[in-house]
Amino acid sequence: MSPPLSAASLLGQATINRIVDALVEQGWFADSKVLDPALCQQLYAEICRLAEHDGLSQAGIGRGTEHHLRKDIRGDAIHWLNRESQAQRTYLAGMAELQQSLNQALFLGLFEYEAHFAHYPPGAFYQRHLDSFRGRANRVVSTVGYLNPEWPADGGGEMVIYHPDASDQEMARVVPEAGTFTCFLSETVPHEVLPTRLPRTSIAGWFRRNASLGRVLDPAS
Ligand SMILES: O=C(O)CCC(=O)C(=O)O
Ligand SMILES: [Fe+2]
Image (cartoon, rainbow, N blue to C red; front, side, top):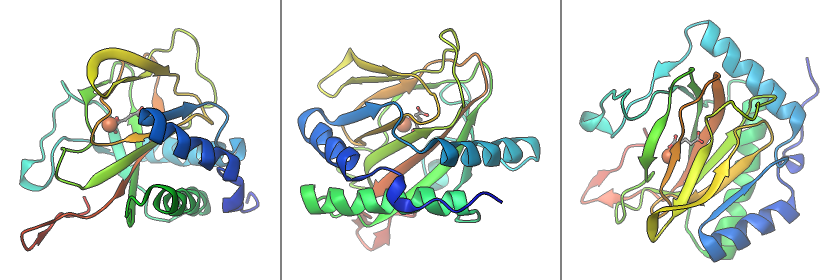
């Protein structure tokens, strides 16, 4: 058993401040060496076990009855975080800390965080998209933490972040290597995952402000 990792070690106040500033200034944040290496290693081992033991489900697009499997749009397989391991609880505690700071600094009114492991097999990709429809007010801030212990220069699988107002203008190419963390505004920042050459692992998560549509509460998954 590895020793439990403290939540305070996950992001730290200096990084949280940089994330807040980046979201205000440009709508997105991405940096390497943000997440604790030991935690990434534990989470990586967990998703590898899930992948080996049939613990992942093919991801789809859309919600509820609009949910469809479309490998021509996204090719990852997922497992929702459910606090079943100490590593998951530590990651979620770090995100809770981030949520609190985002609410304090930006008055976003975030009150829920949902996240899944994602495994992209070789050849898989996720076409350019937004994580939330404008006005639905469901997913407000997206996060991605990467778990692969190393990533070769020709590994593919980068996440491309596009300009919110000029969606063909590339702002960043994020290499999916353990420790790297990205965070962006779900309703305005287009992004895509380029085809990966190697199995690619991450945790994608979203801070939500649940939208009450009439009397129907937008479901959490
Ligand atoms: O894994 C990534 O880099 C991004 C994944 C993504 O865009 C999503 O799951 O919505
Ligand atoms: Fe996305």
